[in-house]
Amino acid sequence: MAEVDINMTARREQVDEPWLWRLGQEFDVKVNVIKASIDTDFGWVQVRLEGPIEEIQRATAWLMTTGLHVEALQRAVGA
Image 1 (tube, rainbow, N blue to C red):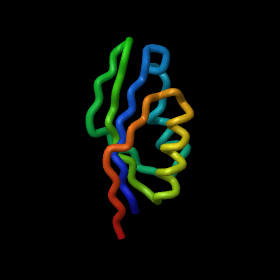
Image 2 (tube, one colour; image 1 turned 135 degrees about the horizontal axis):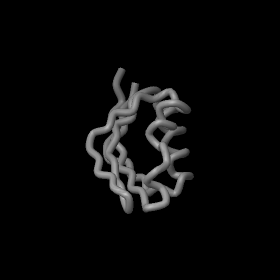
Image 3 (cartoon, one colour; image 1 turned 135 degrees about the vertical axis):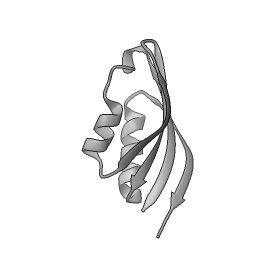
Image 4 (cartoon, helix red, strand yellow; image 1 turned 30 degrees about the vertical axis):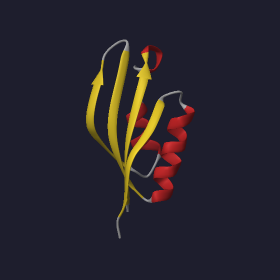
């Protein structure tokens, strides 16, 4: 299993989209919200994705296609 901490930021037109829900539904990853601040104009969230490294990579690649600003902060691979 692997863990990756990711920061995502969203502009006004992206704030209402269910990004976190889709991560949990469409990819074999566990999504843990570490910190977040969301209002009607802007939002940011720090999440920890846990799961097989291939699924985390797929999920991260998908996030980058959404128009969100995505930044990986920390990676850890466990046995």
